[in-house]
Image 1 (spheres, one colour):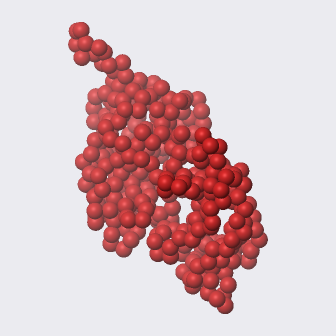
Image 2 (cartoon, helix red, strand yellow):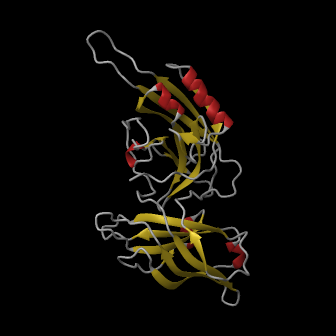
Image 3 (cartoon, one colour):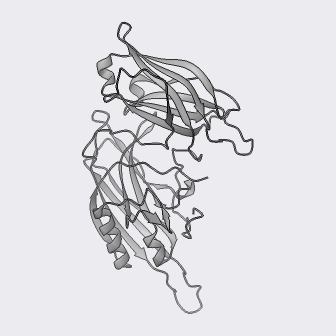
Length: 329
C-alpha cells in the first residue's frame, strides 16, 4: 500500500482507476462568453502553467485541454484544443464553440480538463476546473487564472438524495491456526456489499451501476476492487464480498473504507455517491487528510466493527458526494 501506511494491499479482484496516476498541480487561464446574436457559447482557452510531468522518465508532458458539459457528457459533445508537445506551460489562444440556447446553459456545469496526449492512447489526466454556469456572472468576460483540481465526480450535481447502500463489515484479527503452523500476524477486513436502494436516475430510466472499493490511505491502483455491473435498475443487488489483509488492530484507527457507486455507460462512468467508513478524525498516521471525513453514521459503523471482532456488523447508510482522492504513483 501507500508508503505512509503499514497495511498491505492484497485484494481478491483488481480494477484500474479512472483518474490516472499523476499528482495534480498548476493552473489554467480562460474566459467564457455568450453571443446572443449567434446563440453561441464561447470558451477562450489561453494557456496553462506549471503542469505536472506525465512521463517521468522523459520528464515531459504533451498537454491539451478538453471541454464537456456535465452531468451528461454525451449530450453536447466535447471540444478540445491542439496538443502542445514537450511543455509544462502550454500556450493555446484557442476558442472552443458550442451552438446552444443560453437557457440550456444555466442547467449545466462546464468541465475543463487538461490531459497529456499519449501516442498509444493512454492519456493521463493532469487536472480540471468546473464552472457552475447557473451561478456564473455573465458580465465577467475577463481572462483569469484558476487552480487545477483533482478529478471531481460531477454527475448528480444538485441532487439531494443519492440513495442508500446496504452492507456489512467484519474484522478478523491476527491468529494462529494451530501447533506447527505459521501464525497470521495481521488481520483482515471483510466488506460485504449487499445492494443499493433508490439510486438517482441521471439518464432517464437507464442506470447500469457498479461499486468500487479501496481502503485508504492506500491510493494506488492495485488497491481498487469492484463489483459486477447490474443493469437497468435503481435498486441493484450485488452480493459481493471484498477482502483486504495486512491490518493490525491499531491500523483500523488510521484507515478508511471508501465505497463509490458509479453509473456505467458507453462513454464514461458517472459518480453517483459514496461512503467513507472510518473514525472521521481528519488524520491518518499523524498526517492531516481530507478523506478521513466520515459522517456520524459511517464512524459509528466502523467503531462497532472494531469493538466486535469476528462478527458481521450490518448497516444501511445514505450515499453522499465527495472528491475521490487521486491514485498514487
